[in-house]
Length: 374
Ligand code: SF4
Ligand code: SF4
Image (cartoon, rainbow, N blue to C red):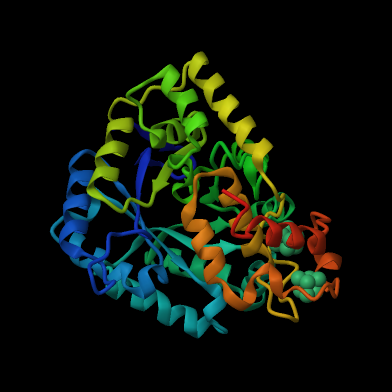
């Protein structure tokens, strides 16, 4: 297993981190604890020492399951990360209750890496108003959390504001070869490097999309290496950034675990020919992007109920990838589909990307006509 040092906080972490948002489920839709245990055991046996969950994952049951499954391990043999969802609370007292609940569910006295969850401009304002950072610092002094950071989903400018506002121990952003220019993106990566803040990466395979490439693009990778899995290309691309200390993979099957472990067992940086293949695939993917919507949500809510970012998300997913699931999800949106737009124009005033939303929503409607699309 490849390990990296977080010099700022004196930690040595496995480059592959176990993300606990996509545990396998049983027929009742509950976490399949038998299979999850097998997956976690294999990962820990092979040297994974960073495990990332959140209060809200799996309808608030991910922490419970982890607490049970990790009990047999020496607490010092792994680093536990979990997150505080500020948007479900309105006071420091409520935050305190959530932390106590997390410690109890995880059956531990301390959290190694504690994150303010999924920050964006609006949540950051809320956190400042409730003074949650100072509360987290108090928890640090009390030994309940060891390192404080945040995970992030918004544009670069907001990222810069947040990361420079505090002396964070670490932070976590979405980074993959498709999204180099999306959210914090590579510019955000460079800023973490400049500031010396260790970085944890999430969505390295873009929620599974980069393992579901159109055939011609998958072929581009296979020309270079017939054996390598599509996931391994994405993971190695993320790992090629030296300030990326942990790459979280939300593993949902035993096969995922084995494949990822194989990538990091004897991690090899991308060679020149390989890096060129990634650039080609990236370029082609970006050519096929239909909408440059970043999903920031500033245009929401729509007075007529259109879920604007979700429409664009499925539009892109369906046009970029062989993604029947996105097509099904789009049709499942019902009243929040593009067809509900009444062209009032309210949303366009708020869009920082200056997207002609009304026009693009019409394109979405056309695209998803039964005879069109992917
Ligand atoms: S233009 Fe359409 S999508 Fe935008 S706010 Fe008005 S109804 Fe909603
Ligand atoms: S349409 Fe514009 S404002 Fe709405 S989510 Fe996309 S980028 Fe953000």
